[in-house]
Length: 419
Image (cartoon, rainbow, N blue to C red):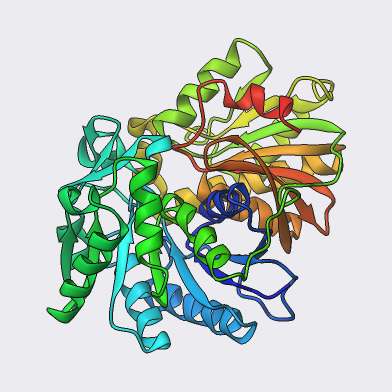
């Protein structure tokens, strides 16, 4: 099975989001945790999951290029740099610097940038990113504790992160289809643009963008724009038709949820779960000690774990509480505290027989996967758009790594009906 598409994701939930999109469109896909250090598993696509979204720029660039080296050495014919559908980063990076470094590694001079994911209410119109009908900077993302997004104009945002010029392929061009998109990107590249933000408000737009970028060495964006890529390989006779791309081993055992995301979606999911399942919300501000918090949570879980109904353990909080914790401990220390506590909780739950685990939040997912010693994730069917069940090796448990912004309000309950 030749490796066709090599992907680099800047967080763990984003990696599973992308892998799920590729599986849905017929590519057997494996997610690898961290920069590969040995032979890669056989798959049509490999997604390397990094924890680089909030890392120092130099570290994010170095890890991303090392991942690219491993994927190219394995024969990848095209690279995909995946970031969040809310384009979240700081003005210093890391989207622009990583994309710059990958273009340099490939000897290429141009890439598109399209984080749109209409199925999850992320669309781009005239270069502006919308969450539903709301501009990104009014959607709640302006209060993100690590990467607050205060500007919805992606041309401006990306321009602040790169020395290269950034252009736009607007809605009117995208509506005309793949040929017009390809021609517009060629004109931008010939005019000295390094990147093009590409408008998209529907899946048909994303399919056309993917077709237009068939010959690009590098594509950057959210998982949505990847939906058109498998067809490119299929058209070249490189990708066989598959009906088993999402097959996973049978699941069983106890079930649980740990949540660290502070997004509106996750807070709503916790609120819904509170009426249907045991829920513990950790008092991180009152007890800023990871070991104590984990011990309290695991003691609370005794006698509540079963195979039919999950328990939910959350360190999520509304913006004002997050701000208070950051003021008390500092931003990085506050984030590390939550990650350490919840990863310890997850480890304790697995030791107590949990075999099906949902983790909410990108940073939390990275910490949990690392603590559990997961090396690869086999990708299964979606629960909600962008969130699949996976089979974690070598642990033998089923994991669903949920981006904080994704999932319906009842996600924490219905997830366990899908595995």
